[in-house]
Length: 335
Image 1 (cartoon, rainbow, N blue to C red):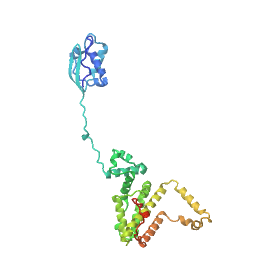
Image 2 (cartoon, rainbow, N blue to C red):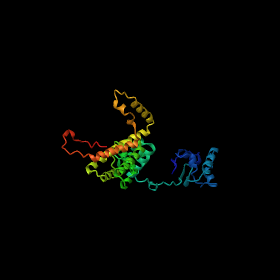
Image 3 (tube, rainbow, N blue to C red):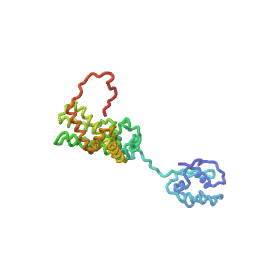
Image 4 (cartoon, one colour):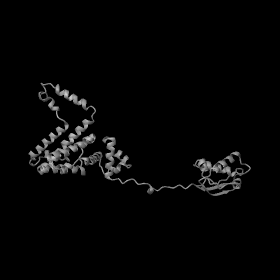
């Protein structure tokens, strides 16, 4: 670094020290920092020869003492003094510039890492906070980089759901025992997973997962249906029906569990049934508490039994040519 304007015509009555003071004030570096940076090469007679003169003032002497008393880290490269100008060249303390390549690199961004981070965000902040922007912040990257893996938030939610489906217990598939009871056990485990995450359970009604864990679940259900003697075509449709019913059950139960007013709403329903106008609602008054009887688990087991009995007894409709009004041009309406 060199002093700006170090070669300058000066009044011969000015001392080299006053010139140096002018140069120091032109620097962006604060004077204290600059003073601490000069090497103590000037001492004894050398300093006297440089700063003594007929016009040296007390202020000059104090400045000289201030500047050169604190010399530590900067090294004077050359000094050239005449009656007309002062030239001082020096080099600053060596600063080590750390290359980007030497910094610890971030882990590679992969789909598995993104999904794992998404699950962590959902568990800590809730599904409502799980956006691509929030996830990008968590991963120290830009939102645009996540579109490589997910088209939108719904696609991300489907991936999170698939990740959580890994905790569904598929052990009953290969276990001994009645195939219907084992099928019920697998579906009960699935509902249990959904009930842990109410927003995700509701999202499951609309998302269409296609990941490996979802396929593992479908494979297990089809295997049990086929073991029970269900025809291939019925099994293909039955697995969709079973997933619809159990997903809706999980979403309903999970939502009720997180609702702080669920107890009040239940009491209101009980009162409405008990006090229903017999003239307008004779069937409701006749059934009364039977409409509200049974636990959630008991009701789900009964519902699955009804479905399985119907699947075993009901063949698929024979294919018939569809009229133009019956042709579904959408991507499908099944959940």
